[in-house]
Amino acid sequence: MNEKNQGMRRKLTDYGDAEFSLYLRKAFIKAMGFTDDALSRPVIGIANTFSSYNACHATVPQIVEAIKRGVMLAGGLPMDFPTISLHESFSYPTSMYLRNLMSMDTEEMMRALPMDACIVIGGCDKTVPAQLMAAASADIPTIVVVTGPMLSGSHQGERICACTDCRRFWASYRAEQIDAREIEAVTDRLVTSAGTCGVMGTASTMACMTEAMGMMLPGGATIPAVHADRLRHAEQAGARAMSLASEGLAPSRIMTEKSLANSLRVLLAIGGSTNGLLHLAAIAGRVGIQIDMEAFDAMGSETPVLIDLKPTGSAYMDDLHAAGGMATIMRELKPLLHLDCVTVTGRTLGEEIDALPPAFEQNVVRPLSNPIHTGGGIVFLKGNLSGDGAIIKQSACSEELLVHKGRAVVFDSLDDLAARIDDPDLDVAANDVLVLRNAGPKGAPGMPEAGYIPIPKKLAKQGVKDMVRISDCRMSGTAFGTIVLHATPEAAAGGPLALVQNGDEISLDVPARRLSLEISEKELQHRRDAWAPPDEPEVRRGYQKLFFDHVTQADEGCDFDFSINRPYVGRTPV
Ligand code: FES
Image (cartoon, rainbow, N blue to C red):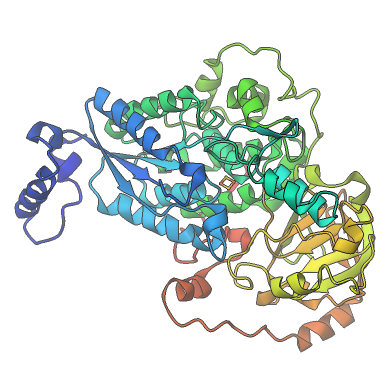
């Protein structure tokens, strides 16, 4: 690093006189008690995402302190700065609507503030994708540190944890199997500590994918939020950021077609959230790489699901960590990974795997020879109802519904769904296919996690636990069921879901990768010709206007069109 351009000398405010800018900057920052010695050191920025609204990030202050310790032990000056913090339950209308805003905020702060490297502290679902998108675009040496998963708790002797169990208890309440008092009591037990959801939901998925991509120090994905190891990991990240800065190891050297392919491989092997695919498309787009869905599907066929974790299995994230966490997963996956990818350690993924401690007996991560599912955790569906593609998480499906034909029961919007799903007069049977449309990136807006369409109450009471459900929105990684998601283009943009009518026959064949509306092409064309877009919401100003004017569809990760590094220069998985 050229000392003349390091630390506080970077990114001088433009007054037309660089020396004046530096003089003024020093005068102001000295008001915070810094000495000239401190101000002469390399600066490590720390994106601080603490928020009183975000329980998943409750431990961020301790993490910031540990990172600062690491930076200072290595001779640098740590400077934390606030960015937007997004929690799933405190993001109206959806956190997905705000992900790109957080990404822009983080990217512009990374660009605007003087720093030689940056550590971003993410955790809750959309935060890590937003930060990786930002890091890719700003291309400043960056390490991701996550807050880590919460601990599991218990209710009436049963082990539980957010948020797969949240949905199970709510389904029981809807089916009148538990009463209002018990569901209230459950809210005291589901989230037993600070940290991200303790199952393989989107937060855990993104943490594992980030480590596989090489943007996190090894071992960081699964350490529970409240373990002392979490703080030691943060301290190590602080120290490593100093070397990263001097080496100039920027994300563009780490985020490549191969490393993104490794990340997708891990997504499949952990039975991760479908959101992981959407976010990876957005992250890859920032470095000019497009997801090749056919290749991803083929990768799925040769990638078994190895971990026995909720929502598809039985264990929790603290079990995965006790079983060795990502080390155990990466050891198993080694033959399927690109080992020559450089990571934030400065070493290759292969070197990191070779340096792992020996394996030990555990029952959470299966060997390649004895997986939970043989392949195809997430499947890419084609057919006249898929448009440019829809996906389904095969490992979360009911076996008996993987090949299914049924009558469409259509809901035109989220409001329509809320108004009619529990209507005792709703014409619906267990074999029907529930269709929710106008719930995509623009239609909702913000592509909410509403794809887990509730089983109509009258069927739930009869014991129906799963039905084929199709939508143009997303599903929480903590949910399960035979649920087709991300139909692209969305109905509000004229995608095929817009053409379905109540009573149409829909055919799903997951092994054959088909999703079909069983009507003639002539009738389909007739409906296409008659289709009119839904009324545009009254968008007048601000972020809402930016969102509606520029959000892309699921195949491009719902990033803003102007943020994607087009034209694409590569495709992954390779
Ligand atoms: Fe934050 Fe689940 S709500 S990770």
